[in-house]
Amino acid sequence: MSASFVEQSDVDISPLFSWSKEFEVVSEGVTTPVFMRLLGDADMNRARVAALRKSAEFRKKLRDLDSDERLAFIKDIDDIDMETLVMVVIAFSMGDLRDKVLPRLKIKPPKVPRTDAKTSAHEKYQTDIDSYPERRLEEIKDLLNKEVDTLKESLLLEPKDSLYKKYVNSMIDEMCEQELLREFKSQCCYLGSYKNQDLSEKLFSSYEEFNNLESNLKQQFLREYSEMELHGDDLKKLQQVTR
Image (cartoon, rainbow, N blue to C red):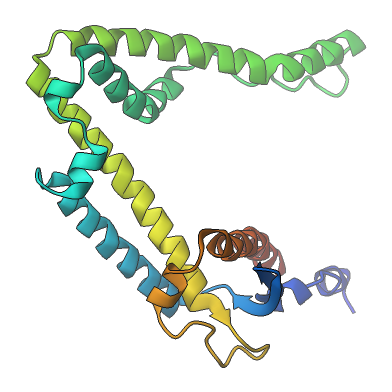
C-alpha cells in the first residue's frame, strides 16, 4: 500500500455526510425536536427565486410615493437637510470607496529573510509582521478619509434634488438587499426543516406558517441554519482535501 494512499485514507470524511442536524426549539416552555438539513441545489434555487421576488416587490413599494413603505422608510425631501443627505450618501458609498483605495496601498507584506540571515534580520521581520495589520489599516484609513473629503466636497456642490435622488436610490438599494437576505434565510429554514429524522415529513405545511411564527421562535430556526451553513463551508474545504 503506497504512502500517499494511506495519507488520503487517513482523512476523516465522516463530516461530509453530516449534512443534517437535530435541535430543540422552545416556545412557551414547550420543547419540540426539529430536524434540519442544508438545502440541495433545487431547493436553494427556490429560495433564491422567492427572495428575489420579495426584494423586487419591496423595491416597487418603496418607489411608490404613496405606499406605506415609502412613507415609513424614505423621508420626504422637505424633511431632510443637506448635511444629512450628504452623510447618508457617503455612508452607502464606503464599500465602493474602499474598493477604490485598496489597489493604491503602498504598504506591502514584509519579505521573509533568508534562512541563513542574521538573527537581527529575523527579529526585524517578526516585528514588521506583528505591526503590519495595524500599519495597513492606518494607510487604508488615511486614503479613505481623503476620498470621503473629496466626495463630500463634490456632493455639497450638487443641487438638493439631485442629492435627494442619490439618497433615495441608496436607501432603496440597501433596504432591498437586507430584505433579500432576510427572505432567503427564512426560505432556507422553511424548506430545510422536518419533523422526523429521515427527513421525509416537512415541519411546515406552508411558508406562511413559518413566516408567521413568533419572533423569538423564528430566530431559533434562523440561528440553527446559520450554524449549519458555517459547518457547510468547512465541509466544502474537506471535500477539496479528499479529492
